Amino acid sequence: MVGAAEQRIRTHVQETPLEFSSALSELTGARVYLKLENLQLTGSFKVRGAFNALLAATNDDRTRGVVAASSGNHGAGIAYAARMLGVHSLVFVPEETLQLKIENIERLGGEVRTFGADGGITEVHARAYAAEYSMMYISPYNDPIVIAGQGTIGAEIARQLPTVDVVVASIGGGGLIAGIAGYLKAVRPSVRALGVSAQNSKAMAESIRAGRIIETQHLPTLSDGTAGGLEPGAITFELCQTLVDQFVDATEEEIRSALHLFIEAEHMLCEGAAALAIAGLLRAKESVVGKNVVVIVCGANISAERLKEAL
Image 1: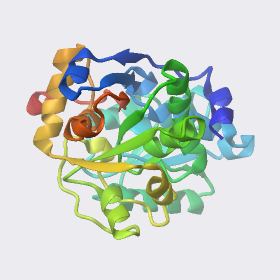
Image 2 (image 1 turned 90 degrees about the vertical axis):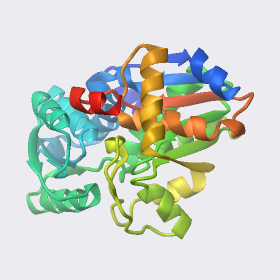
Image 3 (image 1 turned 90 degrees about the horizontal axis):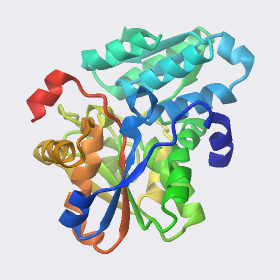
Image 4 (image 1 turned 30 degrees about the vertical axis):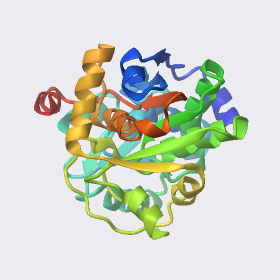
């Protein structure tokens, strides 16, 4: 599926750089590379899955319009891809979504409506709304076509660094790490996947530990892109059970520190969910010594106010 997605979306998205990080390599004893999805169109990897889902849909589905649920980046990806393909998009966002991300979705052509205090609640409502009005629903992670789109990052990594040993990614709904790890393990079975959760909101990690999807507590986190619960029956649960070799949690202080480190050492911007992956790498550094490690810098959408507060 990733191969088909790669062909489908290639002319619509960027092949993002993979850059060696001297700073993180020195801190971990590994050879650390950064997959710079913060430089992707819309400032996030999410546009990959959005384009793949819309391009794989029928003309009839696209004509009826698309509905999505998002804390920001998936919504922006849907809005951008829909506008480029001439499709109407409606994005439901949780009540506490950053104003920057709402404005970004609207600027890219999406209609925004607010519903629910938590991302999981928002997803259930958005899916029901799409069914009621016979519109196409595109999940941020609970869709094999979307996951395959995110998996094209893995295809790029395989070309850019064939000797990759470990891939590190933040985990929200699990679509990012499932897509990447699924592809990389198929072409290089020895690859290990390290999934990183914010201690303040870690629905996937706690569900994996419980052996089933469960309701969990969600506190405010700088990693707003990974915050919120899982949709009931999410296919990413079993995928993460199978594909993720190690789960790591990071505190808010560790996420803030990683954000500061990335900006100072790499001289570019990333958002909280991307800093989360870096924080997880530093937490698990003893397990990656001497390895070729790729960290997914998943996005750059952070407001000036949130950035100032974090730093």
